[in-house]
Amino acid sequence: ALSDQAALAIERINLATDFDNAMRAAEREKLRAALLTSISHDLRTPLASILGAADSLATLPNLPQRDRDALLSTIQEESERLNRFIANLLDMTKLESGAIEPNMGLEDISELVGAALRRAENILVEHHVETSLTPDLPLVRLDAVLFEQVLFNLLDNAAKYAPSGSTIRIRGWRAGGSVKLQVLDAGGGIPGADLDRIFDKFYRVSKSDSQRAGTGLGLAICRGFVEAMGGSVEADNLDGGGAVFTITLPVPEDERISVTP
Ligand code: ADP
Image (cartoon, rainbow, N blue to C red; front, side):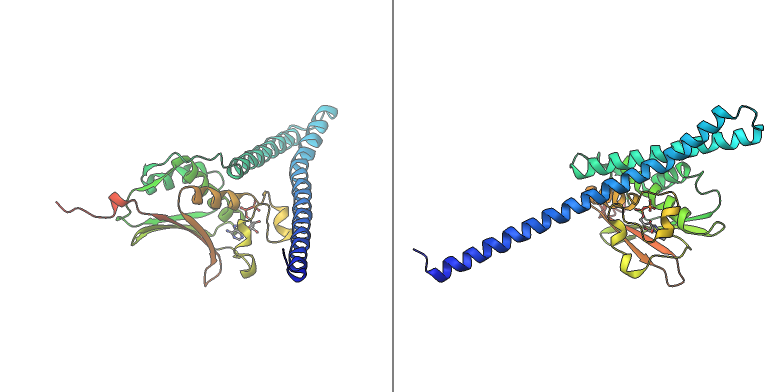
């Protein structure tokens, strides 16, 4: 039989554990409520613009063509934004339920960078883009679709958070057993305390960010996708200002030894 003292100690531990679990459940519940509020807000804001614009078009038949065009663009842009948000939510849900199964193949980074740049063309019209990939980049094992999405999200952010007219750089090189790929911008950078939290879902640095189209999901998806492919992604600030995102991917075994004929 247990001594009274031991029984008491166990009782205390159980109580503490119950308390801990209850606290954690309460925390989770609070977080869930906050997420739902945030999602509802993100869905409602573009919807309100769409409804408003459609309503004006329907009730004001004599609007000048220029105003009608502007209302139509609003409907298009805001629908696009809704579409992106829902796509992000689906990606996030897939990631969290472990349903992402990367379709890994040996891929040429420079081709994937090219594809992502073409897809981001419309977003990048106001920026200069400079790409420098060293010629010794080995093929890397990854899922081309997921990887392109990661690059697209990083480019989208660079365009969003760095002033128009500035330069966005993409750099890639081989560092021993890894390949490094960076997206660098000349924006305001990220406050030090937020460097890791920006990868949390729905996390956005400041209130002013919430005026810019965004979901706070882009980087969470980036990290989830890169990790699902066996790599890692980190954020940092450049000395001269601006943010830099670094993706690290392992060089596949069979690409490690360079064979000279
Ligand atoms: P979103 O851009 O939709 O807000 P993300 O998950 O892509 O969501 O980014 C999270 C936050 O990280 C952004 O709200 C912004 O505060 C910060 N951030 C991301 N990329 C950059 C960047 N290139 N420069 C400065 N801040 C950035």
